[in-house]
Amino acid sequence: MGAIAENLARVREGIAESALRAGRSPSEVELMAVSKFHPESAVREAIEAGQTLFGENRVQEAAGKFPAILADRPDVRVHLIGTLQRNKVRDAVSLFSMVQSVDRLELLEEIELRAARAGKTIDVLFELHTGEASKAGFASEDELWRAIDRLANARAVRCRGLMTMAPFTDDEGAVRASFRMLSRVRDRARGRYPSLSFDVLSMGMSGDYRIAIEEGSTLVRVGTAIFGERA
Image (cartoon, rainbow, N blue to C red; front, side):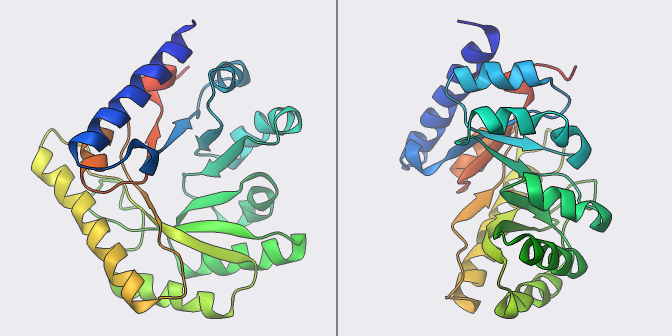
């Protein structure tokens, strides 16, 4: 067994332990392998170990890595988890099955336009700023609601849930507060928009995915703990 396969097994075990400790089924939590800055060969090694969901930060990097993989393995899915510029949306729509980082109304509208022209339906998560230093995501619930309201007329974009990044800190309380905030917003969103799906809570990375699972995460984004330090 190679290093990546061993790391994947270790992370999956950690996910299962954390879920059971929280009184949840491990099957409720999906693992995303964040492959940014790692080569195609590393992705293929992870696929051989049974991993089929991957996350990338940049459209250009993913475009140089995944088309050949997807041609060989149509069961593999790739999500965009980094900031998306409007001039990259057309390329993103052709490659990714989900954009997890919708952080402004204008971006949502551009995704809808490009996906409709391509005859595709793109899943999206709305990114909420809950304390991370990068300031990525909607800054307030009011801004978030205005963007979600736009989905009433959307035909090529499908809401799946919410995403956030916890602050990079050793303060576990601050990390938990970030995740709990996203869970509360998800609950309010379900009440406001009963016809939309908010089943996905994408939160938790290599350093805090166990805490995220305890706070309700359904999708953890793990890179370093699987692939090692970036190449």
